[in-house]
Length: 150
Length: 273
Image 1 (cartoon, one colour):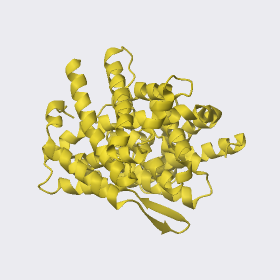
Image 2 (cartoon, each protein chain N blue to C red):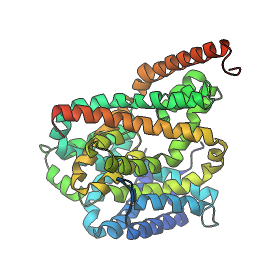
Image 3 (tube, rainbow over the protein chains, first blue to last red):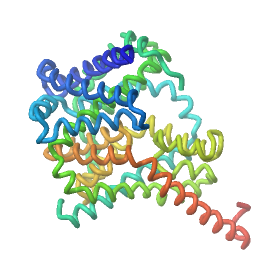
Image 4 (tube, each protein chain N blue to C red):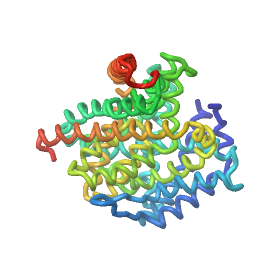
């Protein structure tokens, strides 16, 4: 467990550096201003990863991480003002860019599999994604309007 | 997929240096928007980063080993993204609870894939593959479900893998492009698309909601909160939704469609089906 935790911390730290670089170049936030927020996010992720290993439930780590992050940022949680202020220095897109950079590099090795699928599968997959996206948006629109939220 | 040792991943400095440079260059370029009819296609740094990274795989700079080592960075990077989304949801908790009914019911919108994509798949000549392809958007839990029920080398298994691979390669890029375009070109509210962005994959949600934020920066907090809450809901309920509603409905519709086309063939209309 300890070995995993140390390795996770390293990987998260490397990823964190990539995100801080993106945050700096893209959103003009100096890296040392964003470090406290990044440390909070890394700590939350680590606790979530540990819970996944330690607890007997079959919930993936992201489930714990999401819930934990929500709890520590609720207005009535002690110190949540700091959590929210620090993490607000990190843009969500600054985290998304390194994910997709690594994803692009990684996908290269699946490229051969992908080319075998053929054009018809490609069309169906597009319809699958469009169908889900538009279907959900239409229902959300109807209910949100009906509730008077939008 | 074999597991790579995290230790070798950490020490792969060539990979990390390239990723840092990619991020710096693409973020420095910044975003562009292209007007398409009434809507806008947003080109975000993450899209350039994806395609530059993919392109580098075909150069000597990135080897097969580097590409394999990139995988844990994606998985752990997504945990940071989820943490960031969580701390954006917390302060907005009252707005989320108020929007609860819409959040819960829009999960049913995932059935849209069945009604849109299943007829198309059958029309294109797919048979039982189409069940695997269109019962859901084929994320890991859905692949697990299909493989578990029909087997990996069954037609259903091949179908679900096809959409899974498409989603892995292009899902985030595709949703990123269409969400900005649809939100600006259709009369639907950006917050409805924010909820739709939560399809159950961190990177797809980030791309889809990222484009929405690019187009509507004044709504950033609400977009992230709604998309994130919807994504958590999809992650936690998506599998059960597929088991009890999505998959049975797809199979039922498929058998209805097959019976109809057989009847048509029996009448002597079409070619042998």
